[in-house]
Length: 421
Image 1 (tube, rainbow, N blue to C red):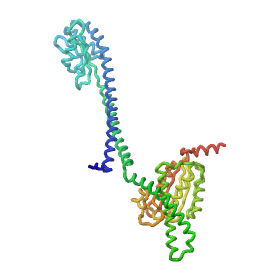
Image 2: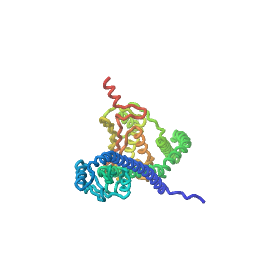
Image 3: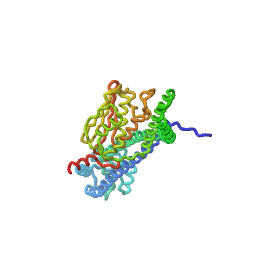
């Protein structure tokens, strides 16, 4: 009988619950163990201090023998005035030096003391330690009562703190477990990445052959009959777009696999923007600050080409690209006066293969902004898009000036060295 497949949603919930259980049980065991150790230590310390004081007090009580009415009162008053609360059991009567500190004496405790032992007890809910013995030379029993309210108050606070910490760990574990389960088991993400890698690999060889054939066809297109020329031109254009798609698929597959190294060098983003707009004949106004930025020129160019091409293809003039420098950041903004992006579409602009208008026949593959974001991340920066319908679109690339890049050095330190030299 074939095993029934577990739905991804249920599997994610199971993984999250397992993560929470492991973290909760571990944190709970640690908290409980810590509490019990501290509690044992505090109570044992209280017992040791009281026990060490009981024997001298029993010996000192001999001076009040025999315990008639006045001597009994004097004994109780003497101990109370010294800050000690005691209970005296003599001639069948039980008398406390302070009624507020007179917990019940259990039969087991009294029996052990009557047998000549030093014994102790902590009556339930009294938060007091009672420890006593027989007064030497008599059958009278003297019990010293030590309040432990302060100890129990401290333990209550510790228990509250540990419980709050345990709850925080459980909540954090639930959030982390859910995130890990989603990233690990999300079939959409796993399937998309595998699809991207497989398709780019399988298409690379046939597309290379198509590009070579299309190049030969392009050289002869002017000699073709009129009825064949237009289909040939469309075919050549489609092959070019297919080559671009495969190249982008291969690039984003390498980014997913972490096989894209960062090779840093000094580059001026303003000069690079001007060179790119001139090379592509883009109608873009470039302005701003010239700055020597230590980053990967190839990846920076990849990001800028995607941002500017996106504005040219989907926006409207005037299109501006500006470079602004601050103490720790270089900000490159590409703005257009196009129709903008609808609010419900804006959160998805970096999704792979996403197009605001799926029916459009543009050359874009829907990978440009995703590739731009991944390349910016490798440079230690980020890309953001701000857009409102009717107000155009503003793409912003922020790059750190002082952040250490992979295989790189800090641009700020390099600039300081040049300034000092």
